[in-house]
Amino acid sequence: MRRLGAVAAALLLALLLQTAASFAETLQIVNTHPEDGKTNVYPLNFAVKVYFNQDVSGARDIYTNRDNFTLTDQENSRQPVTVLYDSKNPEMVLVVMNQELQADTEYKLTILEGFEVAEGVFLEEDHVITFTTRDMQRDMNISMMMMMGFFVVIMLISARQMKRKAQKEAEEKEKNAKVNPYKVSKKTGKSVTEIVEKTEKQKKKKAAAEAKLKAKEAIEDDEDEDEDYYDEFDEYNDNYRVAGPRPISSFSEYKSGKKAKAEAAAKKKAVSGTTRPKNQSGKSKNKKKK
Image (tube, rainbow, N blue to C red; front, side, top):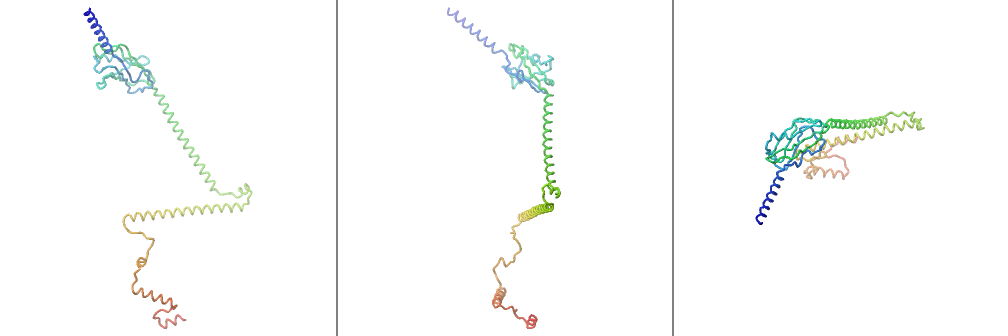
């Protein structure tokens, strides 16, 4: 009895291991890019990435397996594709479209059952991926509308700026226009003479203000030019700049003997009150008296 029980247990264990191995060898698709039902797919240079749960880079029969990938349009017309394998990403298959897809069209990629990567390891059922390409004409129309809207906004802004400029020029023109004293007199009830005098005063006041402003600007410009000149000149020498020419005596208190005597005599003469020059002849004195 014990021997029969051991045999039964061994058979059950072998069956379980075989079942687990068969489940482990089942090939499945775990993900795709784009996903099933994707819309707004760009139709140019398009490819679908299919991810499996096992290494498919060493497919048992690559040339046979490529027929297990079919792409059809909404009219069920088959489109040519190329199936690529990547050894660096062994669980992925890249399905490349051989020609440009039609815009705003639904396509269906089918991976047929029987896709086999090793003996006894194959896809047990079909896997279908549907996607829709984007409407390129609509995208172009939207882009054109946005561009036209942009130009309209620019034109409105330009028109508003031109209107403001014209209005400002009109106000300036009206402000600087000659005053008709008769019309103003009729409108305000003031005398023509009073209006003329007031207008002339305003003109003179405005002219004086403009002249003052111009003179101030001219002086500031001259000062700026002088400062720029001296600053540029001082960069190349170590000289000191002074306000104007000054005698040497202003820098020194030294006096020679003759200068000291002359100053002392002049001071003495000023105190005595005489205006008679020294060593003056009598003839010169008579000329002065006459």
